[in-house]
Figure: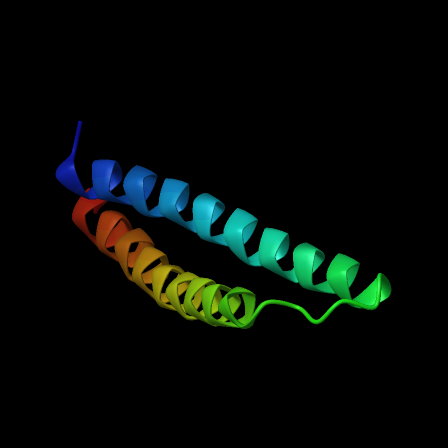
Length: 73
């Protein structure tokens, strides 16, 4: 298997994990807010880090897709 394809698989798995982390932090903040509790400050940091990592991962995945396409030609 081509190393670029393996890198694509790894980046896609990391994107899935980061999306789950960001969605979970958002859901926890929303549930704590509905109960009248103050959301934890760490949840905002986790959510921001997950979204930034996800954005970076999307760009990297797009680059890998282009690299695989160009190497197949």
